Image (cartoon, rainbow, N blue to C red; front, side, top):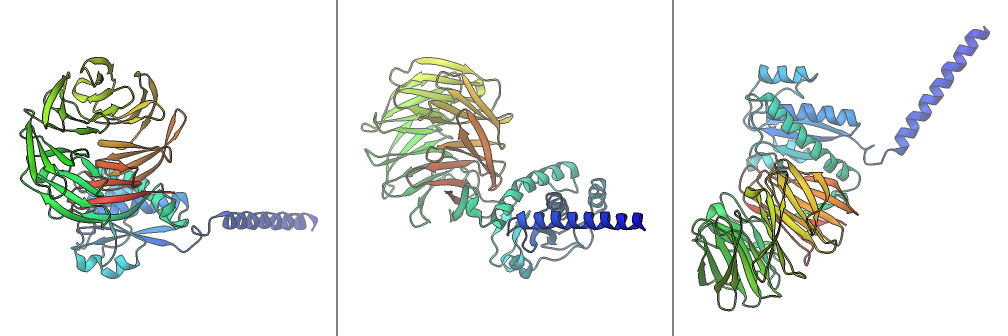
Amino acid sequence: MTTLRAREGRVRGWLHLAAAVLLLVMTSASPALAAETKTIVFVCQHGVVNSQMAAAYFNKAAQERGLPFRAASRGIDLYRSVPVRVQDGLALDGLEAANTPQQLTVEDTAAAGRVVAFDRIPAEQRGRADVTYWSGIPLGIDDYETTRDQIVQRIDALIPTLVAAAQGGEDKAPLQLETKILLGDVRGRIDHLAVDLKRQRLFVAELGNDSVGVVDLAAHSLLRTITGLNEPQGVGYEPSTDTLYVANARNGSVQLFEADAYKATGRIELGSDADNIRIDSAAKRVVVGYGNGGLAVLDPSTRTKVRSILLKAHPESFQLEADSGRIFVNLPDARAVAVVDGASGKQLASWPLDKGGNYAMTVDRGRGRVLLAYRSPAELAVFSMDGKPVAHAETCGDVDDLFIDAKRERVYVSCGAGYVDVFEIDGAAYRRIARLPTATGARTSLFVPEIDRLLVAVRAGPAGPAAIWVFKPMP
């Protein structure tokens, strides 16, 4: 009898302990995460391949992390069965299809906590839902492993955004999508951006469309489109002469426009591949990268080229350092950064690099550092002004722009892989605090501290028509 009572006592003790632990878990969890399960709807053309894979791997990730999300698969133009290849691939990972194939309805999108689509959803099925498009992912029935890996990577980036929303709103993310400004019927690649602060206008180099879009940032609308250009890559607004400069890759010219009615006012021939433009307002000069290796220094008052600075390879992003007059130039084909004197044109230094694809660059003037991003492999690299390495960190792929947010001590990196990475600066450490999804190919951006916004150019594609996505830094 004593032994039985002792056993009963131990059982009651374990039950009380288990109840206490359960209560502790429930009360310590945030109210949002204790709320009812939210449904994430993945959509593809037939509802039996990529959306089924995404729903299955999402549910696995959510279950492993104890998150209140459940994914479902839907099709735009429904097939009735999941292909054996997809079933076998899921089974090898211990998974099965999230649900039997089902047709997408407007009720599905209205009830969903988030809609993620691999293909364009017709308006009658989309309703008023704000759809996130995952473009550029191959079809899982053709290359299951590659598709799975890309989907899982996107899921890993999506989940923190969902958790932030569940915990009290997306305003807890370091960047909040404020609006999307449509650019009209613009096709092909979009390149660099520039801003006219006086008029609150953004200039968009629509390279693949042979045009430049002029966006009214205050009204969040397209003002006009300048057509008849030749693969415009670089744009820049020069305030002392109120002139818009446009650099054309195809014919190597720089075209000038009066920056109100945008009437053509001049043209400067550089020979070939006119690219990035930088405006040096203090020195009243315009610097343009071009050709097989050169910077052209233009005089805005005479609208002529006054000097050429020769380089070893074609310049990509380059930055002006006002205090010293130096120009830091990315030379990806030479795997180097060139440092030149802006006044004399003399090369002062060359930094050899051990990685490739150094297209993007910015200067942190407050800390006296040069930041650049590699594409091969994808990495953020930080140097002192004399070329000594300070830090490095993994980042998203196909980087084309990066910027310093001095107010918040952050770095914003925009990537053609379909993300914006946000890094926090802590002394010599650069820690990624967020990876926010955008759209495949959306690698060009511009951070404008004066209006406190990050502007990301999104080309036309599965994510929708060409647009400028406006992100508000938080807090």
